Length: 195
Image 1 (cartoon, rainbow, N blue to C red):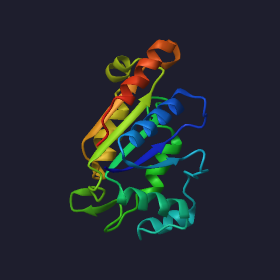
Image 2: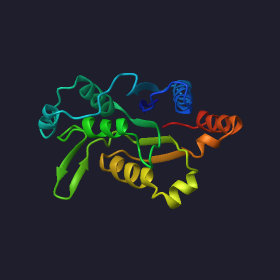
Image 3: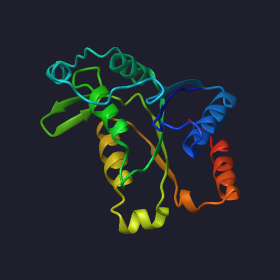
């Protein structure tokens, strides 16, 4: 049994992303994992820095209680699951703000700065899943739009933070998809073994 943190970033509860969230939580519960959901929009997370928050960043401190709670949850997790749409070829601003504000610099936090740059402290997260949806088909996104989510968010940002065994699953062409295609995708997620 793992301690799993699900980071969910979509404002509309009738979205397909919300169906993915429900499916993931059901699968995690059926597999006996301890599951914690961070619903950034529902919890009213403020992704923007103010001057005081930025001043406290290099001290590894915050004046936002949500930031402290979220980082504490990640520090205790074995597995992280990100559920988000791809907007304008990247992650939404809310999720970028989560990374910006929650990932605090300092020993025992999310990262330290060493001689060769960022050294991840979230090595406790042994498995990382990024579940996305995109209007563009996945192959088109990868070949012609720069593959930014995988190339930057997954293979750079999450790797720098120390998150291990990163796996990306995208449901591309969401706008033109059929109910049967969406059901098949949800069934694929329901059948996943989360470690």
